[in-house]
Length: 406
Image (tube, rainbow, N blue to C red; front, side, top):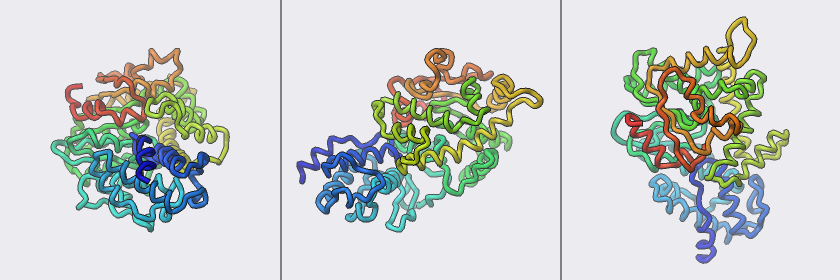
């Protein structure tokens, strides 16, 4: 058994601890352990050749893999893996959700209800439905990071290993009011003020959460608070003014455009070496198929829940009494974004969201639209990483912490 465990130890755990890459990792582990190549994420493993011996080997590898990361949260998660793991969570999709919970610091008992969502202090449990979660505890002003368009915490978890100050991650729960976007922003501001009634504040927005972040920054500043930092991570709001992006908004093709963009970014991201199973499932979504994994289905539902009010909000910037076009949208939207008083900075992945721009235009849009902003935008490119890998890179964490010197 030890020889088999050593062999599958060569299968590296995901760098980004979110459901989709965890699902793919677990599929590789299960295929190796069971010797059956065609494993389904949604079918009971016991119906796919899993007996008590393979279940034991699989569980032992999970425990070793989590402990090998040298992350106290993952080590604690390893101790929470039940002996009867594949009986409690019999499908890969269920296991992936469970492991994501362990990686985020959420203990998930058999009944599926969370015991804690606290990452920084095991003695201070935070409910799973809390929108603001403390990922790291340390000195200084908390850095408040908004998750991407899926609203999930998973993509941000890798930052935890490289940060030393206090970091609050903002996630979208099942009860978060997301419509309209202005209400979503007001709700998050209320949550921020409950934790920190007085500024100053530091903000960062990953991926497509930048517009929501701008709305939150403006609300804080309207209250007289000072926002010392606003860092955009591999997206800048004025990228929405690019003609094809604006056209997808105008023609109500935003979901299709978003899915195609995700596929492009997955193919380009060195983290996945162009081989993510999510690509196949996302292509199936575009083809109208319902034969997709639960993790991708959940991702699509999260994007739709976030993107629909975002598009409605953006549509309000079209000039009245004028035909909707890039020009009738861009001026008002640019003025709104640049009205934030906080200094802007931008971290760009070499193989990130820029790959969604046609090659002929990438030179102009290499800064993701920052050149259109009337106010200065300090910029840093992280070589060798993609849109997902950028949040797992130590250089990103360093820039976020040393924000004053960007």
